[in-house]
Image (cartoon, rainbow, N blue to C red; front, side):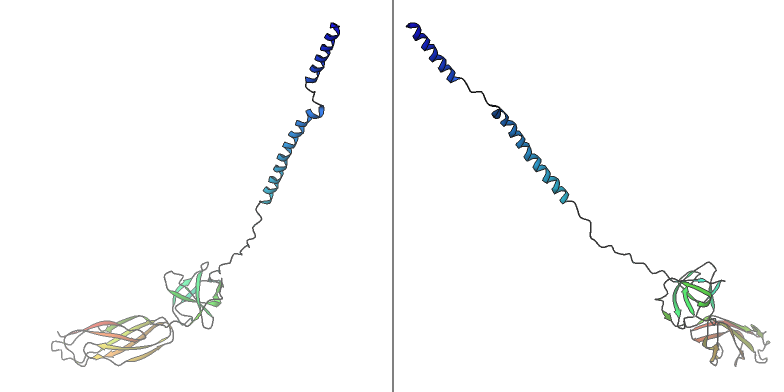
Length: 261
């Protein structure tokens, strides 16, 4: 009887112990955390891809600024001898004096042209600020000739004058009562082109002599002269002058002597 009770107690204890044992996790339950890591990685992959797309979108576009075509600077007009050296004259004609020469192989800048277009005014090939003229028929013109102005010929003028009196000395004797002395006054007027000259002589003893007009058709030397007899004479040294009043004013002086010995 006692043994049956003991058996029952042991059975009940075994059943109670069996109820308190922990359950064994299933295979599905153990795989769940792995699925969770995969999901946590997936969002990272998805966020990376849009960044790459954004980078491509922000690349700069090609510039649309229009290209400006360079403007060409007009070339300087120049004159060069066609074959031989060329005279460069004061004015646009062979009636004007040569002031320089444009040599073979050299060039001069063209500044203007004559009204008839037959001559070029150029910078003086010899240098300085002077200008001179070359015939268009004996030079080659190059460069931009469109804006070259046509100008009138320059006014010619007297460049120099010379004067001499002969004889330079006359001896009238001790009494100075000899015949009236006679002197030859000669002047040379140099001009650089065609012009009209107004001139006269002046003397210390008799003042201004008659005014004369001289037409010079071209450049060169022109002689003027006068035979002078003093109206009153006495011992001494006296002057005479060649006076130019037009086109430019100038004079030259020379002297003669009257002796009484």
